[in-house]
Length: 331
Image 1: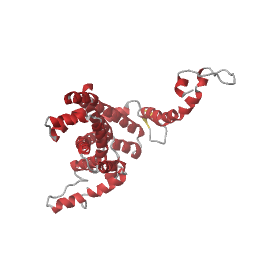
Image 2: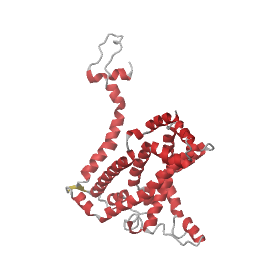
Image 3: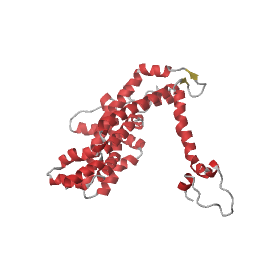
Image 4: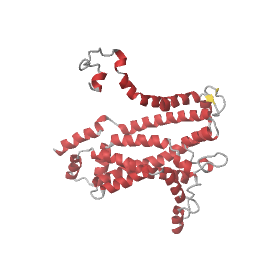
């Protein structure tokens, strides 16, 4: 008897020894026991932390003593906290500086990989390598490149008499530095996803475009991008979630100083998660840190819905319908 038959309550044959089958739930307990480790681990490491963070956001707790209930005070303070709003502004700026060019570059790279014949496998591996490289180690390396005094970038600018840029001290340059590292890390990963979407499109579509005289630019903007809308939506949503949760890059690039300040000079590179880390694990304000975490959750939900509304479009623009359009056009 297979597992599917067992779950449907079917019995193939009576036991050869003539004994009666077990009634009720006792018949299925081996199956439930087999899958129970996953649900136990999910309850301990998934459900409990979420529920505890909700409880903690209404408490005042330093992580050692007894938690004191304070109602909505953490959320009320959150609304008036200028540092929190600065972290939101920094996060949104870095997200915009990184996500928009990253998605566009991913599409261009995927299209080039899809149309290029030679060394496809090499380029696919090369673009995916940054995603599997230690981000801490690479941020330290790239941090030396962005160094104000002895960095490679400023050395190149001085060589062409273009002055210097405070990559780690100027408010906008700090954000650009973090965005550049984010782009470097994730553009190859997103390009591979876009490439998978491209390969799902029927080749008849591109052949029909060639027959109609479309060049590469017209094919890319008028055929490839519209038909990849579901893939672009996925990339945009995952990039939004990742961008709003940005932590490692600014934390390594701008280490915590002796006063517990994060995000570099003036906190200009303090992201929301970095601010949460500062409040909870440096200042030991775990209740307020939990409130910041739930504010971040709401922000991610809002931006995911916005991305879905802007990019999602109607179902008939999906790849499958695109295939049908391409085939009918080819005929």
